[in-house]
Amino acid sequence: DFYRSGMDSAAIEARGFKPIEAELDRLAALNNKQEVVNEIATLRTRGIASPLFSMFIGQDRKNVSLYIPQLGQGGTTLPDRDYYIKNDTRSISIRTAYRNHLEKMFSLIGENPATAAYSADAILRIESALAKAQMSRVEMRDPYKTYNKFSLKDFSAQTPGLDWTNLLQQMKVQGVDSVLVSNPSFLKTADILLTALPLQDWKTYLRWNVLKNAAPYLSTPFVAESFRLTQALTGQKEQTPRWQRISGLIDNSLGDLLGQLYVQKYFKGEAKTRMQEMVNNLQQTFAERIKRLEWMSETTKQRALQKLNAFTKKIAYPDKWKDYQGVTVSGDDFLSNLRSTGTWSYNYMINRLGKPVDRTEWGMTPPTINAYYNPVNNEIAFPAGILQFPFFDFGADDAIIYGGIGSVIGHEMTHGFDDQGAQYGAGGNLENWWTKEDEAKFKEKAAMVVNQYNAYTVLDTLHVNGRLTLGENLADIGGLSIAYEAFTKTKQYKEGKKIDGFTPAQRFFLSWAQIWRNNSVPETQAQLILTDPHSPGMYRANGAVVNMDEWYTAFNVQPTDKLYIAPNKRIKIW
Image 1 (cartoon, one colour):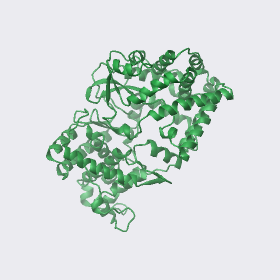
Image 2 (tube, one colour):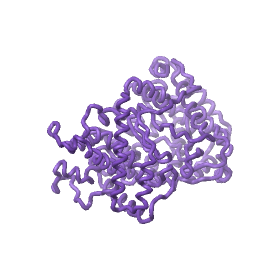
Image 3 (tube, rainbow, N blue to C red):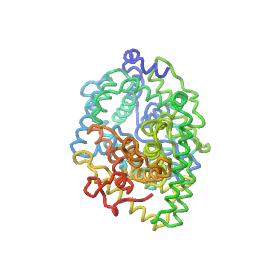
Image 4 (cartoon, helix red, strand yellow):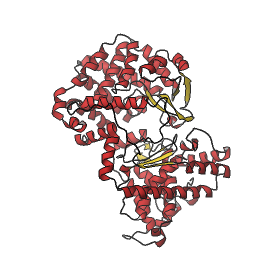
């Protein structure tokens, strides 16, 4: 029914923007700032929008057995703060496109040109002020800088206009006396803006939050205009087909239901068994590598091994599925279906409070083509979706498998020991388990990785941001090295027979390179440089191998070759 409602273009076209008209009218009629604050709560609890700031219920990083409300920066539409505050040609062009987009959107809901222009200016005024108060993505990577615990009473006193004691109650967050705040100065700025800017601006801002979230699911003029902003940001030439968009929404909204179907139909049980073997092989290899490290003391090695051995390993799909009780889905009302699943997701999150932490829960759905490491649970997870070509081909030789999914396994394991993960202990708490000397050596090596990737030019004057991508680059370099060593224990490697003219070692590295092949337009590259903590695919492939002696041997790479780095400059950490 969910899919059918999303594919029923005739019904969606006939409704126009009627599905949100009553909400827009209600927000236009707000009488004072307190009513604005009340709506900030209501829009969240109804699964409609999340204006002004972010809020989620997650584990306390210094006491991971407890859930706590966590408040953070947010409230903007463009993908990064830099688009609002930088004055380079690209940023100005995006801002201009965004302002035009705002005017067009407001005109589509019936505002005359002068009113639509005022509305567009109001949104840019508010969002630009919020963007200036946001931390950069690099700053947000520091788990200590973003750990600021307040009593609810104290933080409410610092932001009286928002009054968190009352606001959290309205957001259904009850029975708590403290909050974690990632960027306190941002919320103080939001509080000041709430008082300083006129009521009309805030009513417009809330209406925009409803409109922008609904637009991709309304009639064609709204969908087309929504896509126009995507085009300006990413350079995407054609709208993704409707069936693909709806399928993605089902995964986001009802992922465990879709996951059950996906696993039943497409996932082979023997792939899970093979993955478990590989994860164990790589974990054992990583342990051997830690024991051999020359730069680390025995004290820190023992703690690192303790953390590695404590990994929880999740493969393919969860042991128990979400049941989505309370979600109502009809075959002919697409937006109300999205609202119903949005409300369910919000309530599911809120209902964690006061309960024991559920360590069996997954952070991704089974069809997802990705993997993750979660520091607060010290866990690695590999959804069923990634256990297929090109990452994992059950019929392929070991070189291809270890260079593909093996490197992904090593990558996620190394995240437990990257610049962020290394700050969490075996039990998941934020704590320092390093000796001072070892920590200094690790930071020195990490700085070399930052410099290596900073030197890569992606587009005209745009370079990879070595600090933003540090965690992923450390995980790539470490993960590939671990996967390669694990591969050297296989029968294929030891026999050394060529396949299609390539040695086992060459096939391993070719498999690694193949998983990062992509083709992206300049606009997408420019956006990802700002927003993505991963380096572009080409630099992921090349940036890791140039630090591995085994790659030089496999392909007989010489000092005259373009990618050559002298042996004493090759970075070896894990």
